Image (cartoon, rainbow, N blue to C red; front, side, top):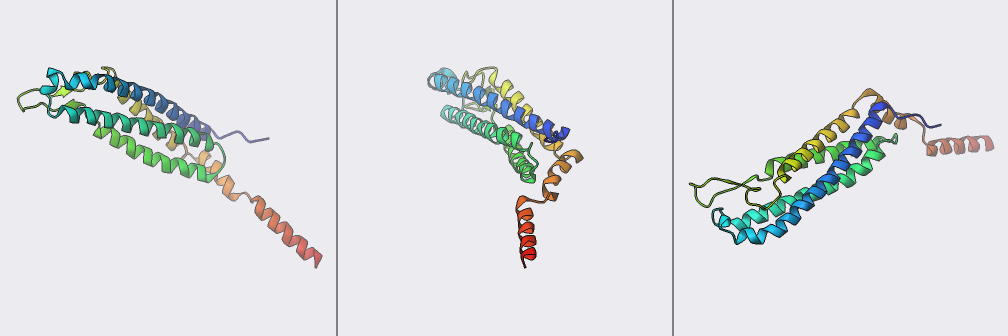
Length: 199
């Protein structure tokens, strides 16, 4: 009969699978933003508002690049943490190491995404006000708030899921695999014993 998973391990697994689920919602929200941008960009570039914005084509390209970046990062989170979230239930230390490596990379990338995404477009001259991207009509008004909430949820689930693996019960779960004798070792010892007895 299989031993039940220690609480920190199954909690970490659920948190990381929840992270993958939130990232899937993030992909959907970002695709909606990309569709809106594709529909609205031509009209924006021909509108009088575009004349009040410094380099309107660059604004559209920057938003598009940011949305594609978000979609790729969220898609990677879905795949990586969907798999790793289930894999860490096994008592293999390599699974825990994969969580730490993937978690470190994801934390860095998500943090960079938070700091780099633009919220405003510069005016054509210094006397006019800055335009928010939602005022330009290029993305839905709800999009920045929802994306911020999703990113905050992804960061929280990632950090909490990784921290659970530091708890003593989780360490013992993965330590067991390194202290147990492998099947190869058992077979090698058996072969040595048979050879000694045969002499």
